[in-house]
Length: 211
Picture 1 (spheres, rainbow, N blue to C red):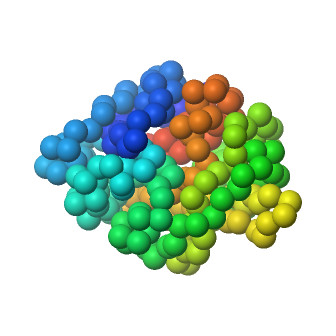
Picture 2 (picture 1 turned 180 degrees about the horizontal axis):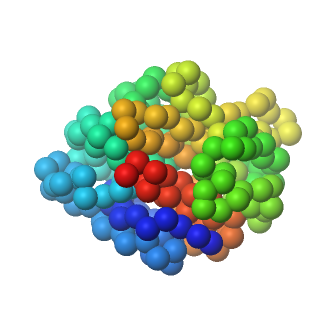
Picture 3 (picture 1 turned 120 degrees about the horizontal axis):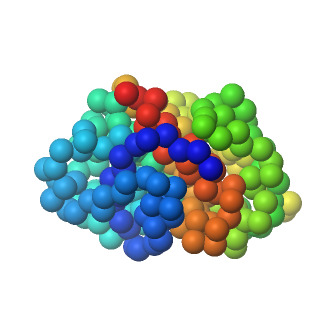
């Protein structure tokens, strides 16, 4: 697994092992305190990753979401992991979206919608093999509907369901990158799913493209 040399600030949500997984990739990770989020120098981080359900358990994240979006506009990269409906209800995303999609079949086929996007090419080439051996479910709490400013990157749905494109979406915001991912990295990384590490490495590497 290759990953660009980036510094990363992590806003812990309900608690997970993603920071440990990132450190295994060799990425320097700083757990951001409420004071860091409210008044710290966010520009020192190439990437800020938001933990699962942070919008429910981190009042500082909610109160300073505008500051975090300004960080992206100035050239930062923010990767938001799965949130519940409160995230969209409080309008914390940069553009309108509603959360509600879910793909419970862990082996549901996945279609790469934009094969040339850096998330699938740099620094690791992502293929269908990277979606093998997924754990528990494909994704949960993806965007059900979303503004045209977002680019859907993957499509997956259970055999009994309709097409779902809101599990991994990307948007440019000013000079920076915004990503919303419902693909449950907090389950895949602790279980050592190889493809999950490769995709997360590519997501993090977006931070090097804003320099």
